[in-house]
Amino acid sequence: MGTKALITGITGMVGSHLADFLLEKTDWDIYGMCRWRSPLDNVQHLLDRANKKDRVHFIYGDLNDYVSLVNAIEESKPDYVFHLAAQSYPKTSFTSPIHTLDTNILGTERLLEALRRRQGIDPIIHVCSSSEVFGRVPKERLPINEDCPFHPASPYAISKIGTDLVGRFHAEAYGQKVVITRMFTHSGPRRGDVFAESTFAKQIAMIEQGLIPPVVKTGNLESLRTWSDVRDAVRAYYILVTVNPIPGESYNIGGTYSCTVGDMLNYLISISERKDIKVETEEERLRPLDADLQVPDTTKFRNHTGWKPEIPFEKTMQDLLDYWRDKLEKGKVFLVR
Image 1 (cartoon, rainbow, N blue to C red):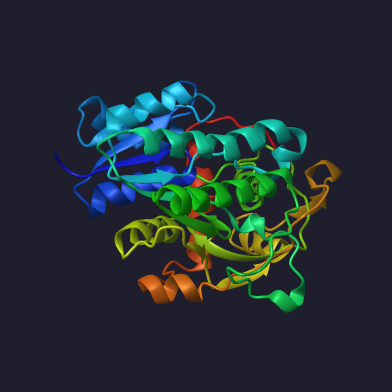
Image 2 (tube, one colour):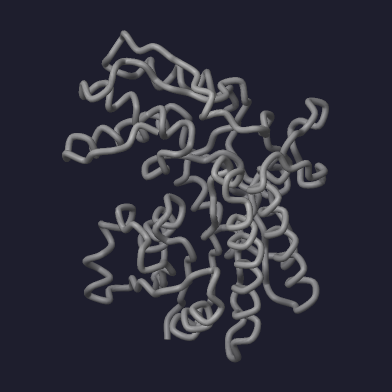
């Protein structure tokens, strides 16, 4: 039997790119956990391989259903687990806090319990937390290292603190090989259109097609972010589990280029073919509270693994804009959100 990896949330941006990376760089079999209603757009290019059972297998699993997780683990018997599935949109967590907390905290507990109780496996488990756990960080604490106190600014951030602590607890209490990441802002092709840079890119592409007026609707443009590319992120996740993983450790991972959300939008507008685009703030796009200083210190992870980001901010943004242009050219119709 060959090496097997289980990716929860394979149909998301990160999960789909991780599957691509592992298929290209390893000989592992990939088991992608998803729900029956999960959109398959991000893994469309993998469906033929899945139909042929060519190293790609889609299996049903829901973080809110323990039995389905037991069944998914029984089917995959993984050597590596990348736990990426979550309710991942901070703004939605304000209107759906209970679902967010249940999915992200209790869902992680259900998954780790199911893995712990399955005899005959002892996988290395990556639990994906988030830089949002640090929340409202004072300027004097920048850049943010792993010892920075948690000050969550959303129910999503609270849920990821729970995810983070559940992962560490299972490593310390039960000896499971759990390592935790706190990834800072990462983007690129397949980024969901509820996130700032992706909704901006989508709106610009729609403007270029003449589908909406030349006005980009925005939320908070003052938030300072350090940007990295999703393809660098999944390479980091692979290195995390294969280069001397230390159970219970947590790592900040992120890019090196920092700018405000407004500066990011200005760059996207600058590479558009339309030169008449305006910007307009919409109240409904603003969060009640925001984590507005997200600048990481990644020294710990770099020293441990040798990883560093390789893809520049400009390529990430260009590829994201081209992703939305391609979707629109294929006749896709989208909500303006």
